[in-house]
Image 1: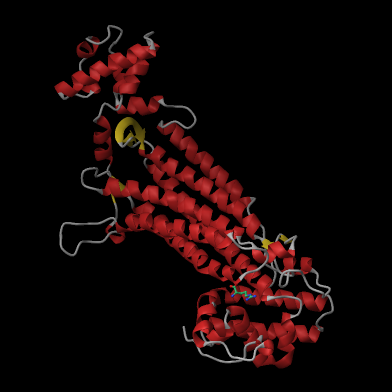
Image 2: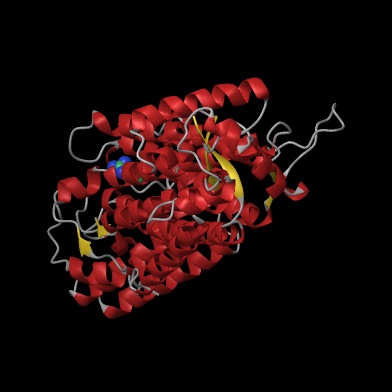
Length: 477
Ligand code: ARG
């Protein structure tokens, strides 16, 4: 970014000395808040239109201002705008450029508003769009998981508790567990968006304005659901950013868990999945290495988002009403949260369709570790043995299996009958991996039939969500 120093600050009236050069740079936010320029201009256009509607500006003044702002937006988009540290932030940079371009009429734009309600409005407009992008990325990742779940609905893998083989599950069921986490993340962000989409503009510095503004006009022009009820609250609280970062933290926590599993599964001892070369990197010293950098990095990046949540909470917690300069520190953590989240979701949505499942390996792993022991216990219960006794019986069979290096399904019926006479030939229907997963055939269970049903319900829910989805329209352009 090119930064030019100019001197025409709009607030120098009561000052006799110029700002210390370091303080000027220290207090400036333009290096990062210029990112909201587009939204700052949209907010200003709506404000000018409203001022004309209520008779504070003439329609000619309004037209000049709007045309000037549109020209500035173009300059910014073309990279022709000279950002100045001396002009502190995105708001004063744009306003001062407006005055330079259209003359004194540009100075009327700031009537009935303050940078305090302006910046709060900008952040909300910006964040609203980012939430929509993030929601779309979650949907893309969800769809990738549904496709994978469908493809691998019959694939057997070990299910773990304590990272010890517990019971066989289907790979599709495992993918649907991930999918379910994203359903809740999507819901949290959708809900958060409702509170983001409230308009601070009109709160002015803190107490409102003496001009006869109509905040419903600006709210409608900008696609907000409603103007904020209280001017002091509107300019000061950043709870919507904290709420977003909190939802983002949970989402990153989920992606981090997916990552941990992928890293394990891609390792040689597991060898459950093959990640494509295009999503891995090599080692500069060990020629055989293919490292799962993408999931590792996503797992690592969760840390910075959790950190941003802590930063924002701490930033807010000691602030008296109303606006304090502390709030300028809200942007970088929020921006980085959005960037990290978008990047992590994108890389996951791109990567998941390319993940190859090594079905023989996942099946072989499920065949070890006596994963159908619970099925044998349940079989005995169905034959009238009390569960506690059946648990004991199967425990003994497992001990025998460890000594003989045989899984339960590999024993003969005579061998099994040593432990309980009720065991018959039909026991093998429940001791096989396919029999075990197929038997868990109820809503939420791992049976392939249930995986297909869950996929269908998920698709149905998503279709309803998207058709009834948000209908907020920004009408400022
Ligand atoms: N750059 C400021 C911020 O990010 C804008 C608001 C400045 N308001 C003020 N009274 N100094 O919060």
